[in-house]
Length: 113
Length: 117
Image (cartoon, rainbow over all chains, first blue to last red; front, side):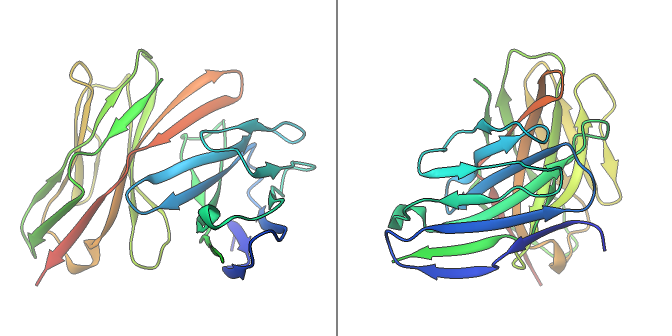
């Protein structure tokens, strides 16, 4: 089934550790995004990529990095995790020739202790 | 900067009744898109309905419809004949093109809707 796959679905991590959240899409969408969802704050954009080889910063980029080596993959890395990065992370993609709709992965719940 | 405001953190409705969720936004753009997404307890984000700003006609998808008031920058969602499966967090979202292939999407903080039997 076409769509977006995120891994892991859930992870508990010690503070200071490095962590990469994986995201893969098979819809050949140009744009990909990483959001974090926190209670009472909605979804906030961390980083985005409008096409392979380019990335940009969203609202809350500090402590996170991304890469876009190809169309399908858009990993999110926490270089040194902190408790405030405990959140649910969503990867999403969209086609610029389409309706503007975002297609979401199922989310990754990350707990930093 | 674009902002999206959902003024109702929580709402409840009886099954089979109608409920309206509010959303306002602030922008100086003239060309943009508006969306309502639903997030049930499964955590999956599901598109409910979308509206292009240049279209005056309100979008409708089965039991879901919007009241788009461009001058007032308002985009409310009406759910008719509410069903238990409509229980979810609802997010209003605003998207506009930055130019070329660049877009910016901003979400509201969400409204938790509970449908009671």
